[in-house]
Figure 1 (cartoon, rainbow, N blue to C red):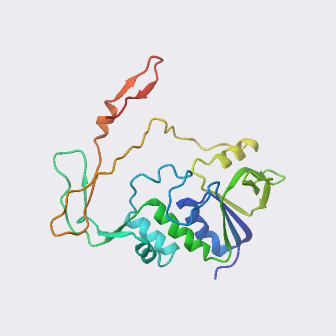
Figure 2: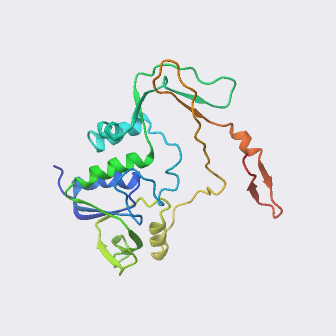
Figure 3: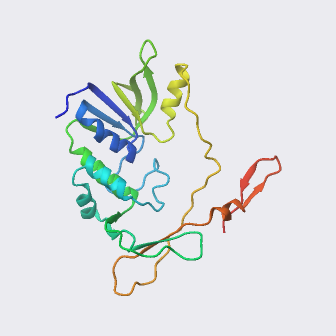
Length: 250
């Protein structure tokens, strides 16, 4: 058992980043609180706080190994929960720009295919077994409270079900909220420099689920098509005010 570093850690956000962070810091703190504004479902259901949860997802081999190290036995838990094991390079083909798809070959390892909702559900259930981790749903973080000398975050203020504000003292705060709004607001209030932000307004994510034709001999088969980026660039047209807008996809 590692030596404890401090008393309280607070993780903002119960997505994959927040769940993994909570598991990683738990051995070093007496108590870890995970705050999320959504009502966390008991089963593998998509929620408002993960707007891309219904899109196609892929858990790569590196991420699978990292999660197994954080959550020992999670690969078996995922399979028992409904994840499907496929052979890397053999059971899934990748169609990208070019004349021919990549050739099929057995790469010697299995990948687990599942929805994001399923993997989050399995990780949440694992955290609920930890005696010093508390998942707090419907807990909307409103403010990071600074120390008197403004040198660090001292507490997290939040509301549950639109109730009275509550405050949690924190020796460590991990902002896994996605856009980092609590951290950016804290930096502004304390006069600290903000990190440079990338402009992502030009990107749009769309996908479509297609049914594969039956595979001879049965087995698992998947196909992922990656479009040529130039096809998207060709659809950008200049707007009247000199900006850019995205034409409608077919």
